[in-house]
Image (cartoon, rainbow, N blue to C red; front, side, top):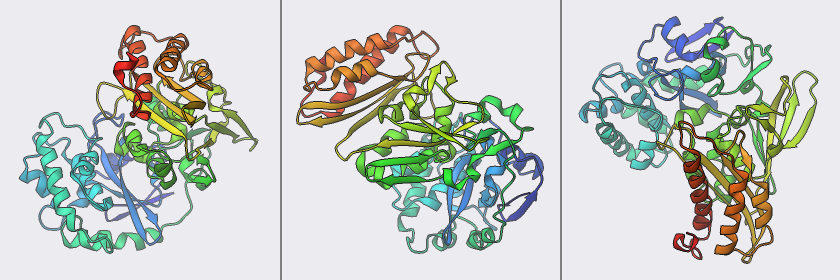
Length: 467
């Protein structure tokens, strides 16, 4: 039996655990404020808040309910737009939307309200930039966004005096959330820790890839819910080595102190990937196993020379292989049906240089035309180690071994980079498709490759020299 809190109500249900949270909210609970839009996590109309126990408090995040299996919210607090309504009048987020004319047809409004309410619950030092980022997964087809951005700025201003010691009480007193939120930590503690049976052979993490591809099929299947395996939900650091569990989410990785310290701009790089609600529930292993030729995290981990561990769920045996050997052909993996990615491991020495970039038609929630990452080790001006990846330019995510091999041992110079780019072009095999022509993708590959060096060595290189 799945148990969770839905707004103020304790839910105990035998509904199939693979049912999406969106369908349960609307059709089982008749809460119609959560809208059905794209069913692919793109529009944000179905955004809810999900609160998880964290010590003596509850940590909330925004999430796309259309991609969230019901089993994943066992023991959590789910908040719909009905759940942020005050007993009397509008809450501060809703007031800001009205004050700034942030709604027209209203279809998208509940998603925006929930995303901004989630920001109010989680922010520590509110800024205009951060509050705009909190709604990067919500689309509006009416307003042109400026009125919504003004409403978000009002929310950020109202949050300037948020009490860091008693944040929940402050939010209640200042009419951001209803007072029942104060009881949630105690109520969640009373829910049984027993989780739904994981009897299925098809693994699912956050569902952000699988439910897009197989939405109608999954509702009746028995799945293996990886979020219910605590050992898969950890990030471990041992010296310079980082080990990610298979169900670690993008947000967990994005906020990890060690990575933020070791990789300058790490937070900015990961903000280029998807949107806040997707990052909150999407897993790194899921991005790898989806086998997209242009998976963003595949590019990042290839450039970090990652190794993966595959666990056979039937025999409970493991095997390790380089991520670069995992992709055998288009959507073809060196993986048995009973295997899951249980770990991803990479080394991150203190002096490693890393850069990631992508080109796509819109900033958030878009698949890139080309994405690429690079990591380098330097000794003075000599390249001692190099790893380069690129997506969107072949049938699989590419580890550019010939280009990397050429760079190793070379002195950093304009001539070296130009020669490496010529080799890089021999490793690519782009096709013309909806995201660009072959020639366009080759041009992007060239410019992005040069861009890595211009960004990492801005004091010694200029674009004019390279071109």
